[in-house]
Image (cartoon, rainbow, N blue to C red):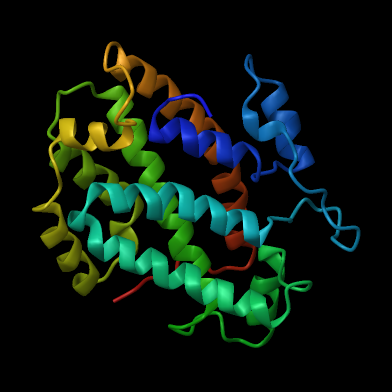
Length: 244
C-alpha cells in the first residue's frame, strides 16, 4: 500500500466492504463523480426481499471499527467515553450474530427479530446498539465535514462540540451529556488531531489539502450507507430512542 493518511487507509478498506443498494447506485451514478462505494462487495442474498432493505451486518461493523475505534485510539483518552460505548455496542452485535450467522447477516433481520419479540427498547437490545453506532458514525461524519469546511477558524473543542450537538446530544439524557462535557475538556488541539490522521512518514507539504480531499471522499462513501440505515430505523419506529 502506498504511503498516505489514516483516512486514505480507511477509504481503501471501506471500498472493499461497503456495498450500495441498487437504488443508491442509481442515485450515485447520477452525480458528476463516481464514489468508490458503488463497487459491490457481496451480492444481496436471494432470500432478501427486493425492497432494498439489506445492509451487511459484518460490513457495517467493519465500518464502525475503521471509522470509530481506530481513529479514536489515535486521538487518545479524550474520547474514552465514546470509544467504550462504541466498543460495547460492536461486541454486543458480534455476539448476537454468532448465535446464527446465516440469519443475522442482514441488519434488518436483527431489527425484525427484536421488533417481533418486543425487546427493541430494552437497554441491552441489539436495536439500541445499531442505533447508537449509527449515531456515532453521524458524529464522525459531521466532525470530518466541519474540519474540511472550517480551515482553522474554530478550535478543535468548538468543532467537536458543534458536531456532538447536531448528532448525539439530541438523543442523550443528562448523564450522558455530562460525560461528554467532561470529555470535551480533553480534546486535543486541531494540529495534533490532524497529525494523528496522517501517517508518520507522509510528506507534510500540502497535506492539509490532500487530507481534505480524502475526507470528502470518505463522507461520500458513508452518507449513502447512513441514509439507508436511518430510513430503515424509521420503518421500525425506533429512530427516536434516547438514553439516560
